[in-house]
Image (cartoon, rainbow, N blue to C red; front, side):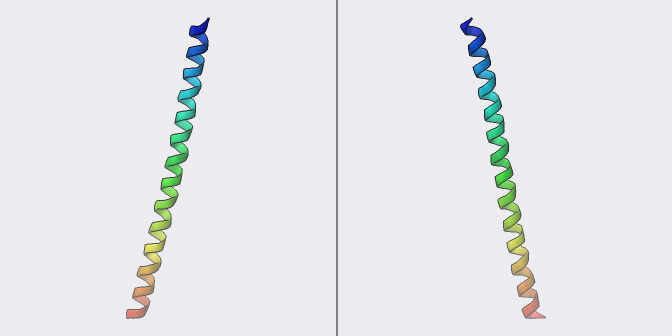
Length: 51
């Protein structure tokens, strides 16, 4: 009986870990896009000044 509960808890733990990893990945992707956009803004500003 305890084996069934243990297996279910392990399964729930794995699902929570997967969800946590996915949320972290989304956060990292968002930060990467923000950095890319900021770099593009800087490049555009520099080009505008030189032209």
